[in-house]
Length: 344
Image (cartoon, rainbow, N blue to C red; front, side, top):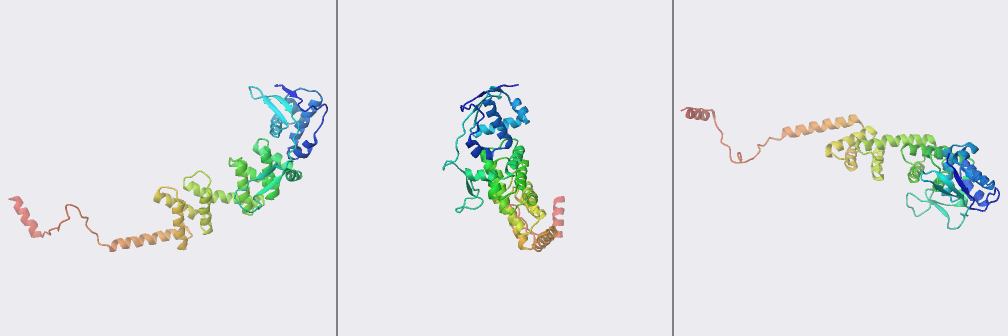
């Protein structure tokens, strides 16, 4: 069992909880994190200086991973100073005095993904007081706790701010927020920027329930990713590529027709070209062709017309150094005379 030396760096002689902790730190924290912090304060007040992660886990009926997540969370918040030994084990914890975060300059900004001169629901500035008000909602702490289990790590203050943005600004329900994180993590994406990008796209598409999000995700995978796969591309479509695919869907083409155009593009120019495929689909759309049978009929008509044009044209002999002059015509008697001459 690894022992941890606990230092009193705040001159606390009894179990004292600073009002700043209650007002500005506790509203954002997971309940188990608060329990760990209070336990550390209690141990300091009782002059218990030799503790371990296992001891705290047994005392609070939490796992050792839960204890480690809590300690790292409070370290990022600036309430704990943590040192580790050569093996990476925590060997020293110093409790620090809370510092007020309610200064005028301390404003949390959720950056918009699309620059806009006017403020809209995709661009919002929060103060710490506003974040605390949202965090006080009954379902908020529960949502944060589940997200941390999804992420397999404690949420940073910026991660918590993103959840506030989803909950307060985009008006996502706790269930939709959890579905959002589950969807992104299942695709190997855990960054806040990616998660917010997906959330903003959902909001713009009017997605406000888990059912709508599931249907939209299926459509995204079916339409967008199938095109990328047909072109031999493994990444998600870029905005310009997505714009092409959206226009094809708007023309009324289903996935089979779109994939047919992609396949013909690869066979024709041997490279993925959204512009070339768009040309094929625009011609079909202009001709009123929106089915595979219509494409087959158009191919037959084209082939028949091409064969007729080739038949109507008289074949021309190729000109080279041997037939560039006027050719002499021989009759049967000419060949007989030549044969008699050669035999003599």
